[in-house]
Length: 228
Image (cartoon, rainbow, N blue to C red; front, side):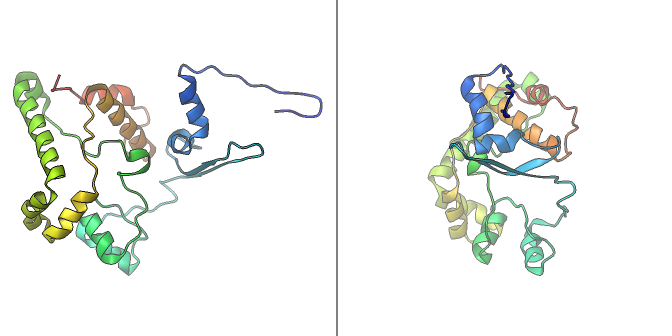
C-alpha cells in the first residue's frame, strides 16, 4: 500500500508450496473455500481479475440467518417448490434428476461439477469391530461394491432395469440419469482422509459439527484402508 510519502509492505511466510499460496488468493474456486467473515459463513461468489487495474469481488452470507431451512419428504419437494413453499431444494438422484427433467427445473449446482467434481459423493461405512476382527470380510465388501460400480458404469440399461421397481421410475429415465454420472473416482487412504476433512470443515460452517472439531483428527479416526 502506497501513499504520497509512505509505503507499507506486509509480508508473511506460509508453510506451503508457492503455487498453492498463489491459488489461495487468485483461484475463485479456492477462495470460496476459505474466505469468510465468520467461521460459519460461506462464500457464495468470488471473482478475481488479475489484470492491472483489476478487482476482487467476494460475496458472503450467513447460512443460519440468511436462509430458512425446511424439511420435506423427498418426493414432496417438487410439489413444495410449485406451491411456493420453498424457493429451492436439495435432493439426491434419482428423485432430483427426475424432478429436474420432468418439471424443467434449473439446477443450481451438483456434485459432478465445480469444486466437487473430483470428490467422492459416497463413503462406505463399516463397523470398526468388523475391520479389526474380520478384515478380509470388510475387504471383500469394498471390492464387491467397487465391482458393482464398474458394472453400473458400463451397463446402465441393465442397472436401470434392476433398480426401476424400487425407484418407481421408468427404466429408460434411470438409464439416462446413470449415463450423466461420472464414475471411477474411488479415493482411499490419504486421499479419502483429505476429502473427509474437507466435508467435515464444511459441516462446521453450518453448525452440524462443533467449531472445536479437529477435522484432520476426525478424518483419521473414521477412515481405514482395508485394501492395503
